[in-house]
Image 1 (cartoon, rainbow, N blue to C red):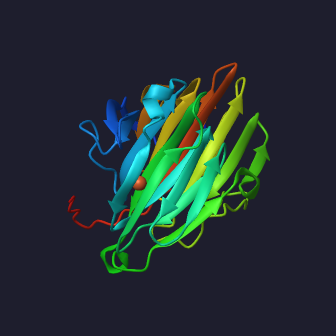
Image 2 (cartoon, protein in one colour):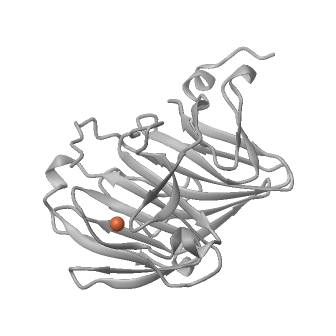
Length: 270
Ligand code: FE
């Protein structure tokens, strides 16, 4: 075995520090969902305050939607995986988010909005992430951005890997439509076929997690004993390091990778 070089030591893998299964809960007017971040298991992962996954083909689980409610001091990011959701807010923004579409809303000093299913049957699935704002941006004017699936670049790599880039920029230079946000987030939706493989540097100061949507993956640690299998429905908090390295098992796997600069500010939940 060749001796470790300076470069090897400077470039180590982020292992899966902790797995979170999420908690079944209900929000809005009675939408059944799984809370991965922001619940009893994992209160927050700075700068991420919440991650919910709503995923059901039973209308009773989603039909009541989220009637008008306020948000303040952070950003809400909705990524639709299946189905349609209509959004309206008190600043006059309105739109429908569909499969593969993203809505990035900066609530900042405050917004009241509703998020209602635009369907009465069939599968509705999506993720909502809350991203904290630094204190000096909490009183800024609200912003609203909507991106449909066609606006989200997909990068195809070797090793049976394709990546939808929602926010940030990959190491190969593919840019997501979401830029200029406070914590410089990286938000990737990664699909692997067969025995696929994905490797990507992540700034060492960032907090990062993955959440598995389909199949089974292994997060490779720096040493074999640090490898961790992560399955559909699991969120893995990544330890600090320079890069993430993941392999998949057949037939397919799909997961999101989200990373951002921690704000290191105290959070008051109202
Ligand atoms: Fe909301």
